[in-house]
Length: 143
Image 1 (cartoon, rainbow, N blue to C red):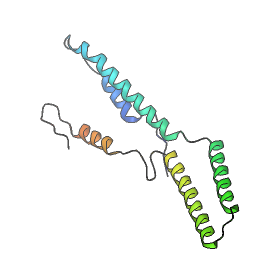
Image 2 (cartoon, rainbow, N blue to C red):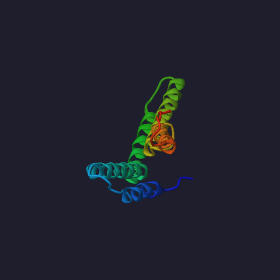
Image 3 (cartoon, rainbow, N blue to C red):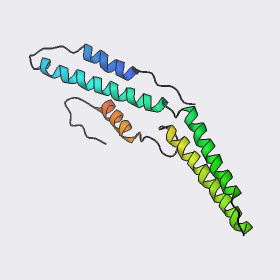
Image 4 (tube, rainbow, N blue to C red):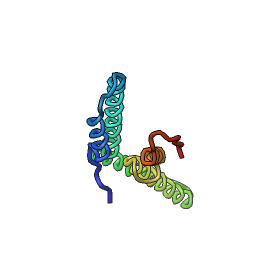
């Protein structure tokens, strides 16, 4: 079962709380803070866009139109006259496979987080691992 992501997430709320607690103990800190705030806003925007992409689906009317056109294509293939019954059956089977595969692709691409064609989480997992294992003052290597 898929759970709906909330925005802002707990992690973004924690980052925001950390930014709120930043103390300015030297005049150079004030220069870098707007960059940190901008990076946080960009991170929040990217997360919002990702959530939107995950919940935005093809309209129902468009899916029904696609189904109607596919059915029309299949029926028109079945009405074509053939001399050979084997060629007729082969054409019907191949047309059915093409229509079924087109439906599979459309449904798979409609959800970017599940299925065969989906968003790769490798970069996000690596970033999370890096952030969780980061220690200030030590040489940190990306894994």
